[in-house]
Length: 353
Ligand SMILES: Nc1nc2c(ncn2[C@@H]2O[C@H](COP(=O)(O)OP(=O)(O)OP(=O)(O)O)[C@@H](O)[C@H]2O)c(=O)[nH]1
Image (cartoon, rainbow, N blue to C red; front, side, top):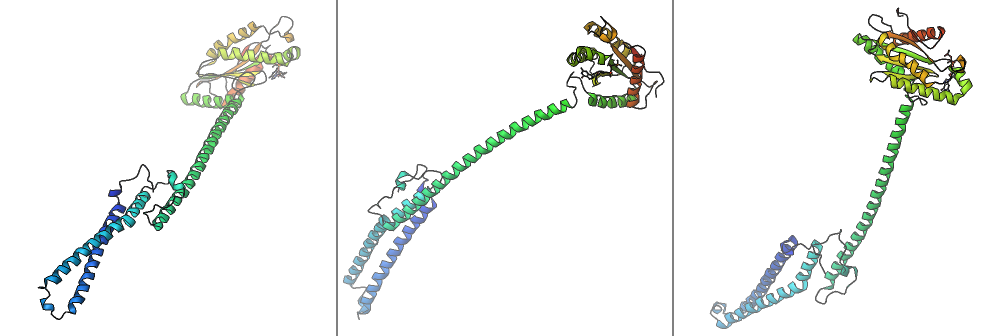
């Protein structure tokens, strides 16, 4: 039987030691048995001799005894050698190949073919060796199948993980889109009413806490209904977007916020600003809109789209009770601006609600 290249040092292995001691024990046993046999035969022989006392002196008997002992020793040696060759050597080879057995390696090719037992080896030992080879072969084939299955499973898991990762990324993207959609006005790209409401509540609380100022402007395009009717909704959308661009360009401090409340109505929230600063900031906006020269037929030929602005501001000297009260004050100021002829800024009454 052949052994693999990673065959361990057999002489130092436990099996080798056990076989070695077995050999010694067998030799000792054979020797002992032989001696016993000779002793017994001689004793019987002596027992029949009446003159046993003269036995020790009898040279003939002594030489017989020595010859017998030498014979026995020779016989024992031959027996040991024969046993070693016929039984122990094949056993040692068998033990070595079993020690070197590794189910992760393919069985040697020779083991896959049913070979005739070597002439010197007993058939029983060859049978054991063949059985071990077959077990080795079966184990190796099973292991190979399992490894193939494990590789397929690993590939499937990788595919699933990749798909999961892609689905997660798509979901994240969608939820980001949804999140920004719910906070951004799709036409103008400005924050929407929801975002503004949150910012107003937050900034109002901060102004109360820090005893600082907070200006709020509501801006509304004048006669926009008429503009739409004459130029169409698409032109109306364009006008809304262009005005939103102007507003965002003008109000761009990090802490400020501009938003579209809905329709043609916009807001500007200016933390830290009072009425004067807000007027100074927003007044140029009216002129900038005029420069856009969007024709306004409601006002007659060669008239352009204008804006009305209502302005209110929270301050420790003029505190409002709530964010809603501040917004209502700005709305009332806008109403006044509209009724006063539009295209102007109106301030909320100095007596807050
Ligand atoms: N093109 C367009 N028009 C809009 C949009 N949202 C609201 N409008 C129009 O804006 C117009 C607002 O009209 P009104 O509320 O009567 O106000 P107005 O005509 O501007 O009159 P005043 O505000 O009193 O000056 C309506 O005709 C709406 O259809 C929009 O997103 N796009």
